[in-house]
Image (cartoon, rainbow, N blue to C red; front, side, top):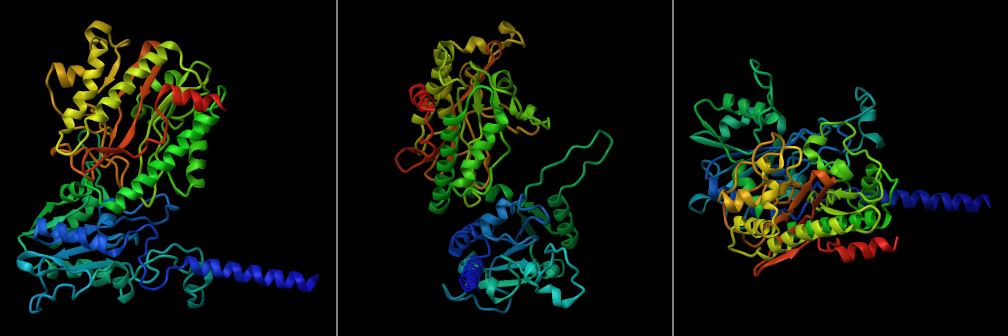
Length: 517
């Protein structure tokens, strides 16, 4: 028996060791376990250089000591597939002075540039163990390579990183500031990629600087007389049209999110807290392999749902209400991530499993508006036409007068999004929108990608590869009713595909699923 236990224990230990070794990436494999093949990122960098034709700097994210909660900067990851903290990508047009341009395919990581010359790509990476979290003193060199200190997936300068990323040259990130003036020599303009959002400060005080703002100021100091231009809109515009790798990731994220919504429908009941529903959904996603949500929970029932989530999020307990029979629950939390690509899905359904006649009537209007908007989606169509298709449904059902604040009063006025008054009667178009600052007019949705809200670039007609949400809403304060139906729509070559169609939308389908609880 003892011998059997020893053999069993040895086998278990060997099995655990094999699993551990299998989890470690072999040399030359991309650092991130969610990255696409290196050539995908090389092609994106090539397209970026074709457009900008000047040095480009793309800083990565901090990411230290956040327990896996923080992700790599989406623009940096879009161009590299690299997760190493503090990494910086530099792209330069043409070969190094004195070098001949490499023959096509002759240098890994080379991309087409001006006059056919290959662009140079340099990835600045942290040195071995630099920034790595540790809880044992490294003054003792014997502990540096102890089992608990081994890096799992981390690139460092050298040939292995160059093979893994397809980027021809890697250097230490500590050398970036010293090398930049040399690399940008002769350039009149340098492009910098990274959102430059402003933070608030009380009047009379200088606004605090973000990490990106500090980085930009440092680059300007290092390159006196050189114009530092913002290339963020260029990269974000590239991100609007997804390739096949991105579409498959988004399709899987939407499918997992739909499964979470189905599980919520099966298990929800009066007496349950809104937060429990969020937990049920997240449990489902993790069971399906999604490591995290794309954004914090938005689950609200009854009167809580009539408060905009951007306002409720100011409170610590923003999701915290016991549901009652007769309530509708508003779940804008179809938000599982897959390979760093997000999702956004919303359903509204009755806690008791059956819509009341008035709930059914209003829900039917919102569903009709969504279906009209989705039906309008195809290449070459303006997003304004998609918005107007939904708004026209609201107008046809007489909701335009319900959004008239003079007629209804501030306490009773309905929230109608998209607004027939705004898009049809007044003939107004899109305005600048930011939920964070509370500015602009809600329209019909937003793009989805590396971020759940990839942006609202509606300046060009729809084209294949775009993925955006269609999410008409209706708020009826006097009835404590808030309804939204949201799906992720892919623009295809001849029309569209609903990536999240697995989550039921019709009254009949919802009641059938909930009736089998």
